[in-house]
Length: 116
Image (cartoon, rainbow, N blue to C red; front, side, top):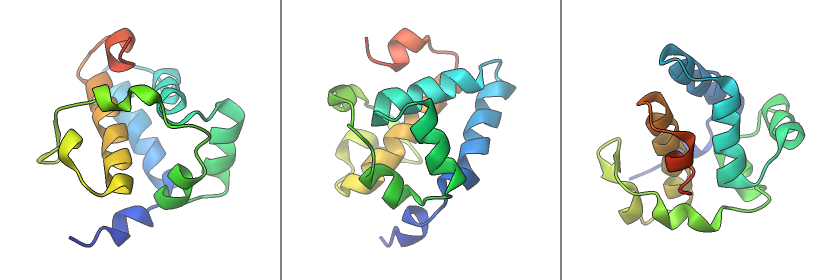
């Protein structure tokens, strides 16, 4: 499968959809940000820089300060694929983020989403 199109998608283009999905279910932008911070190691300032410069997902994850060591605890199905079985490491990171945002929108507690 050619995932180039997904890799080249701008974080700035997708981020508002993450926030909108969360807010439609009564969650907040701050919770979306907390998930991204937890997963990638970015902080408020560095995440905003990534959004402002319209980096693509490939660059976003390549420049991530530190992928959370607990990502292996993220399991389940997203877009028809089990996230723990995705062999392409970049696509797996993108789907981890999708899965966490999905869990937020489905009402899971932040403690469970952040695998505490």
